[in-house]
Image (tube, rainbow, N blue to C red; front, top):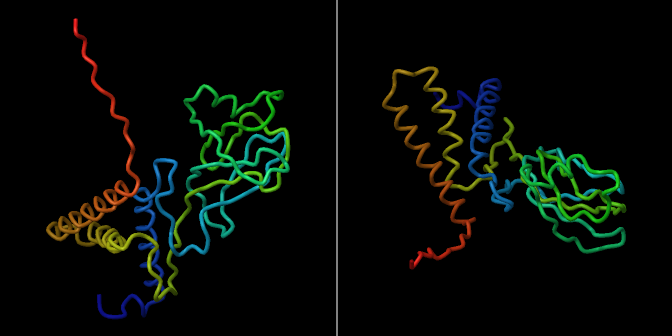
Length: 227
């Protein structure tokens, strides 16, 4: 394309911006957590991915769809609570999954099962406490989460993407690859080169995340029978 062919065309600039933001969405699975540890948060956000809300006596389930900046919450990682209406220190509670024996107790609690919550089931953007709280506490729940990135607008001129610098190139490679597949499918050589670049950058991003959040493994001896 000629110089300013995109920036000088309002419609084309918006279309180009949308393609870059779509590339952002393709990167998200590579940077978001598959553990209870925060791996990434867009550095362009004005605050941290932490929220508090009131704990209500008799209410077991709570949903957090957006943060205070109206950004979509993508993944709730950790939950802390105040153990009483007068408590000032948050305490961790156990996070259970749907295959846990207590999962159905959390999803459909017995009306008599009340007290200080000791566990929470996270399902999508909802938190289900078990047992149901028998007290209320202002800002009694604190959650840690991951959220959507700070997307580009067509008026941005100096903004940098809030992902690791070594993966910035992916925001250009994804749209370029998509464009070639539609408009230049015969250029197999260039398509293959871009696909190789994409694979290399994706692997670098995965490797960096693995290095920052290694899984700690417990080594057990292999005991052999002496019989």
